[in-house]
Length: 593
View 1: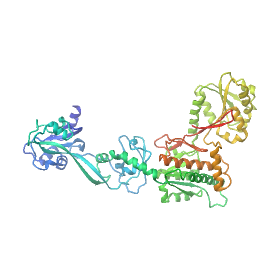
View 2: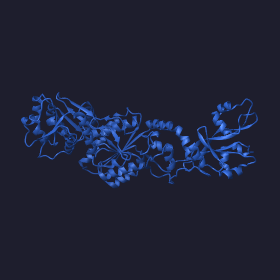
View 3: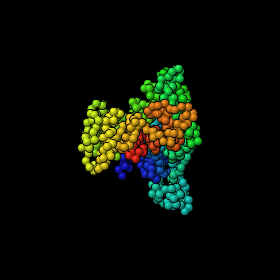
View 4: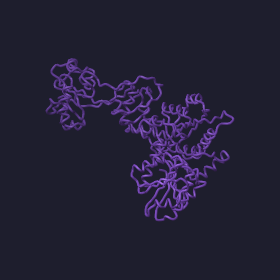
């Protein structure tokens, strides 16, 4: 009753509100000798609106019959419901990012920007139509909508001449109403009698041509909402068969007779990329188009390349590590909704504010947080013994580990390592039955030399204790000299990149020699393998899910990928890292975390 009262107070003069078949209507009961013109002036609604919903009223008006107008059709007396404002823009305007606000959906966004619903769904394949929720960022090209045909279904009211045998029950059943609804429509008719007139609903469907600027939002939603799922699934299916366009934009500096070493490393990345694409040619349903561009380490050249029309058709771009060139390419990706992979730098922060940047080389902050979470899961019941070398600069992650362990009140102690660590000095710190994790303060080779002898002897003689050592990513450079020692000690190494040099590496090396002759350049990470792993991930992800983000972890030969978007307005960070266990039985076990 409270709702009825509020609505009635906002209704037109002489009209009340009735609830009929789930909808609310302004209703007016016709008096003797009234005309449509007179009623329209009295209730402050145009004749056109009255006739839209009561087409029978164009003729003689019948006393005591009702005229009805949906409440939702009128925002306030005498005016039609206001539509959200549209943005007047040229059709050629560049795409923009829009953060979904409360109450918005793909239809309201399309109308606001004068863009097509299908265009928005196609530009945001990662988002299901039901996922257009507050905080999500979607890509929209303003002014891109074309005129379109749509259907509009309206409930109107007609007069009906009662036939013999008609009852409220039979008429209600025929018209999909309850008896109460039908009686509400005809308050002056206590019982249907042959020859009498009654008001009954009818459905009118029109096929109209319109555009986003003129279509009523309610009509737009009524047309699209039942069809969104089918449109989205069809677009995904079409995307699975469309070409994958990849652009590699790197300073190969081919114009120089003696390019710098970095240019050769980029070339190795490209070579590995080519080997992967060749290996995938029978494993994907989608054609892969690769275009490679040399920026010549020149910003003017980079800007000229980005002006090429073909660049806007790219699905993925590979950017170099040079800050200014990367900035240009990242901005281009953000402007045109193209995903840009930063495979080479950990110091660029564009991924924090640009949702189209994919940070392959995990930033130190994220990498450290992931290592700390893994450490808590793996070594929660351990005593930590820090091996601190005052002569060496502390590793940043060592400081983070130390602070984290002390904040969690884990049992811990410190051994100062000035010269070579003695077994007696180490053994005095160890209690029978305990489990220990030894953490060096530095990743230097010299510190490992100082502690390796005592740790190996403790592993052999202090069998009453369980012990392991934590190793830093730099230890991969020492494997030639110290792999056996690390295995004897029982060592866990965490790293963004690790190559176990198994059969997959041997197969890659064979292909590289066959294609290009010789071996890949020595680097860490190995750039040929980085190119190979990156291409494998991109094509596999786009071929199977159509997205680079929130996919299952992809384990490469050297680099694994699991991109996560932590902020709706930011890009994605590769959160996968390797834990390499050099076991005492002289095996190497690699797990992607």
